Length: 387
Image (cartoon, rainbow, N blue to C red; front, side, top):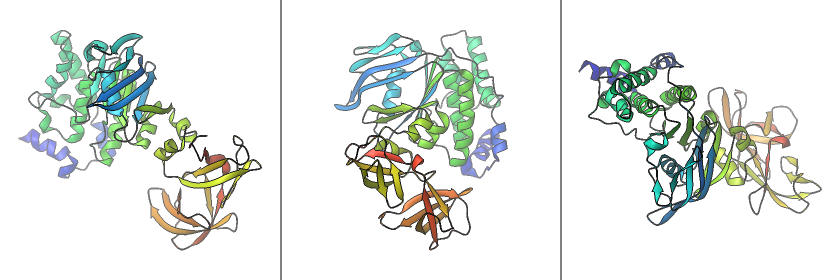
């Protein structure tokens, strides 16, 4: 009963509020997760249909040993299916999957997850309610000596700060602790590839940031090749060495966070990472004219119809002086360290979204001036949404 009450006090749903420092201290010593032999992973021309509906369409994806790749995309884009294919729990109808250059999946053939060295953490954690924490972690270690299995399981539990709870059961843990248990069970066998399906989606915002930071530290310690599924662009940019954006069962773009944000392959990709102000224009004399000023268009010829896309950060400066294009503050929301504005500009129908440093003098109804920074805008072909 005491342990159950302890778990209730740890849960954010029972008023057990803790500081960030306390949350961090609950985790074990960094550098003790154990190192894996990272594996290379490659999907080549993979097709998957479920219930007669195509889910993956000739998808190609390659991960080098030790990197962390975030699969990003809307619901139904195929993110979790890629995970299941790579793990060996989803059959494919075309193409092949290779681990370290060896075929582990092809039509009619699939190597089991344990034989391909994969650890998979499900979105709902999939803990065994009838097993203790220690036995939950030991479950994936049945291929080694029992004493060694217990040693590795206890080491994993210690790394996530749950060793003292090893004889408890999953229902006695808070949501964050259950996530830590699921993580320990995933990396305890030291697989060459780790796969995490929406690992932070069930956590509240305050807890999510801490758990994400600690989880990333463990992933770096293990050196395992890692795929993380997420629907949150900001999360993908923080966590991944590279981001693979999926759309309609294909990889629309894969690159570093900085490159995919600054040089999106098309307009839908740009829209996925932030709201955009989109202005239609026509190229004339190497420039596209907008109500905010001219934008150089070096990759387009005169007469091309283009879309000038402006993100909320970086492309526009706000000033109270008489410099730039006159605008009006339509609305303002205060956030931590910055303000979120809607700005009205003559001849632009929709309000422009801007994030800027906090300024108490800029209130709704006030006139200001905006200056366009052309080097930070995105330019797309209007017909195809491409550069």
